[in-house]
Length: 207
Image (cartoon, rainbow, N blue to C red):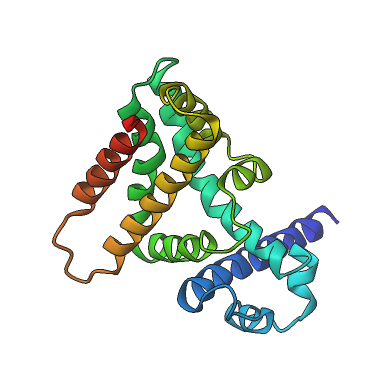
């Protein structure tokens, strides 16, 4: 019985992963609004129309899980970096925590490009809100980093802090995405990440 349950659980996990990866690819390629649940099921090799509803409840639930899955992968690295830095990080170290894990993901070129394309679609949606996403998906590494950033940006009002942090996030995603789309990029990935870090530092310091 236990072996049967284990095999059943493994199949369910594989189906869930296939649906998330299919959604990430299709949404990155076609956009959130233009991808149907039927297309996602076909891309994932699923004939059972109820598979998506069983695992995620709805297309919205699948999109949330897709954001969460890849973001949690990055956030584990951010948490390690924060622990290594200690309790008094510099502004540069904080942006390295936020940005450098994206570079590691880009070593998996297809996965990284799909994730960035996916996120670039998500951040243009009317209901996108960075703070809500962080809280909703319990993205602890980013939450801790932004708490430190709030201290470093204490010269700003709370509204300005939130606005600038959202701009920094969007800038990071779009800049690295643009690099991933260039077949013969004039900057290396390392130079691009450094450019983004320096840009974010400048925006954080701006009165």
